[in-house]
Structure formats: structure tokens, C-alpha cells
Amino acid sequence: MACSSMVKFNAAASSWIGGQHSFNQRSGSACRLPSRRVSVIRAGSYTDELVKTAKSIASPGRGILAIDESNATCGKRLASIGLDNTETNRQAYRQLLLTTPGLGEYISGAILFEETLYQSTTNGKKFVDCLRDENIVPGIKVDKGLVPLPGSNNESWCQGLDGLASRSAEYYKQGARFAKWRTVVSIPCGPSALAVKEAAWGLARYAAISQDNGLVPIVEPEILLDGDHPIERTLEVAEQVWSEVFYYLAENNVVFEGILLKPSMVTPGAEHKEKASPETIAKYTLTMLKRRVPPAVPGIMFLSGGQSEVEATLNLNAMNQSPNPWHVSFSYARALQNSVLKTWLGRPENVEAAQKALLVRAKANSLAQLGKYSAEDEGEDAKKGMFVKGYTY
Ligand code: 13P
Image (cartoon, rainbow, N blue to C red; front, side):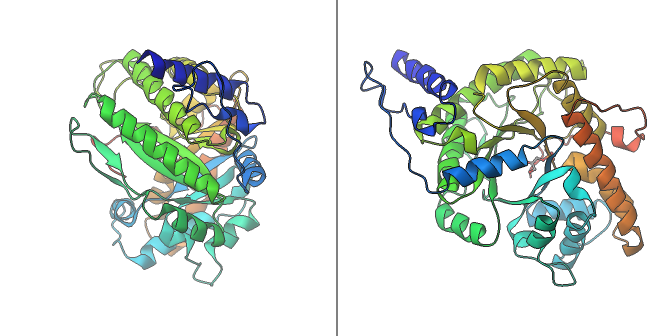
């Protein structure tokens, strides 16, 4: 145990001093050779490109539009406005989002589901080209979803490593330049040491495979909002999770300058008796990140996790009131799409208004990334929470 915590310390230290040199990040064999640092040179052919892609996604005043819902989850979005879950309806919805004029001013990357990566608009223009024209980097969800983790406390693990290298190579050919893998950690279920280790190891293997195929990995261990625990407990679990994630990222020779993180904000559990202010959430979240995330990482792109649109934006704004070692921004799905869906309602005559609604949210979050957002003009709808107990993506 003492040996493993020493390795963890070394892994973190090596990345902190790593600067631009990813070859300093290796420390996996320190346990066997405690008196000598062993560096393995990682000669990934995509390294320069990965660093460039990550930097362009983490550019000032911009963040990620996450529309990578699986067909089943997209069906839930469509059902909320009375539409059937058909390929035509999914395409119409994604077309509305991805052809919004001027979106690239606020959005630097869009995470797509596989179906969308290969889809085109009704006029035959590839969605990937619509994004490129707006200077938005196309991304792809590569995990295969969550299944029960045997031997755990009713927790889950994320599938998708089998065949990932060849799938990633295909996605790159199709125009994707970054990837996303979402696994979850449940506080009310423990979390068990097994679930945390599995989540961290899976993320690290995925990150290494993605980088090997030219895709910047978004590393997303979502700590679910479920539970009645106080914010201190979330901080404790988040620190534990991110320390294991970075331990295994280092062990897998992942280039820290070529990844992006997608953490949950550190908040009290959704059923906790007291709500926390944006300032408190910012304080706890930044404390956690500063303790665990090396400055070599270019961007922290938060998920919204069931917060209302306004809450997610206010919290991001609070985190950008003073300079951070990384670009601190958004990669929201629910907190960018809710008003859009409610405005669109599946009607062609509402498309323009729905695109305007998307721009309103994207601009609000862009301002929050710059620490200049005010919620004064926000409507009541944008303030409604979207938390669903036991939410699956
Ligand atoms: P939310 O912002 O809805 O939590 O989305 C999380 C996510 O992982 C989407 O890619």
C-alpha cells in the first residue's frame, strides 16, 4: 500500500514538472525500482496534432456542445416534445443544432453519436462539414454504455474497449478529432474501491487508445448528483476518483497536454437539505481540481449533470472569476438543449427560433467561460432543474 501511494505521488509529480514533455509522465514501474526514475519515451505519431486539437477546443470564450445521446437517450429528448424516435426525427433535431448560423463563435467542439458522425443534412451536406465551416471540431462518443459491475455494490462499469482502436481509426477518417468516454461513480452506492478502480482504469485505457489513433480523449468520470450527502462528501469522493484516474493515465503513458477533462462540479447531493451557492460550488470544485489536475492539462469542460441551464451557467461563471491553470469551460448536453427542444417542438416553422435559443445558451456559457455572465435577463424556464434520479445516458 505504501508503495502504491508513492507511485501515485510520483505520477502526479512527474506530470506537474512535465511541461511540454510528455515523456516525463511515465512512472508505472517505480514500484519495482524505487530508487531510480524510469522514463519511457512515447513516440505517438499524433502527439503534435493532439496538443493542437485540445488547445483549439480549449479556446477563450468557447466550449463544447454535447449532442452524443445514444439513440435510446435521444428518444427520451424527442419524447419530451411528443416526437417518435425515428432516424428522420433524430436527423432533423441534429440538423437544427449543427446548422445554427454563428454557432462557432461560442462553440469549439461538438460531441456526436456515431449515427450523426456519418449523417448529412437533408440537403446532402455532411454534418462534419457543417461543423468545420464554423470552425467547430467534430467529436465522437466511443463508449458502449454502462452495465452492472459484478462484485460491486450495485454499481456499473463502462463497456467499449474491445475493437476501440479500429473504431477510433475509422472515426478519425470520417473527420472526428476528439472522443468521449463517460463512466459513472455513485456516491450513495459507496463508491466501492472496485468501482472506482474499474472506472479509472477503463478511462485510462480508452485515453491511450484514442491518442494512438489521433483523437483527443475527453476523460469523464461522472460523479452522479444522486444522494443526500453534503458537499464535503462529494469533494472527498471526487478527490479519490481523480487521483486514481491520473494514476492510471500516467501508467498508460497518456500525454496530458493532449487530453480534456469532463468532471462533474462538486455540489451537495441532489437530495441534500441545503443547496449550495455558485460561489461555494466554485470554491469546492476548484479546490478539488487544483489538488488533483496538473496544469499540463489544457481544458476542463464541465458536464451539467441535471442542473438547470441557469445554475450550470452561474456555477461556471463563478469558477472563472480569477485566472485558473487550465481553460475552465462547458461541455453541456441538457443545459444547452433544454430550451432548444421546448422552442422547437418538432415544428419546421420553429427551427429558426430554436436555433436562436441555442445561441442564447451558448453565448451565456461563453460569457461564463470569460467570467462575465449575469443571470438578470434569464427566463423562468431556464431556471428549472433537470435532475432525474438514477439518470442513464
Ligand atoms: P449533461 O450536460 O446533460 O450532464 O451531459 C453529460 C454528457 O456526458 C454529455 O456528453
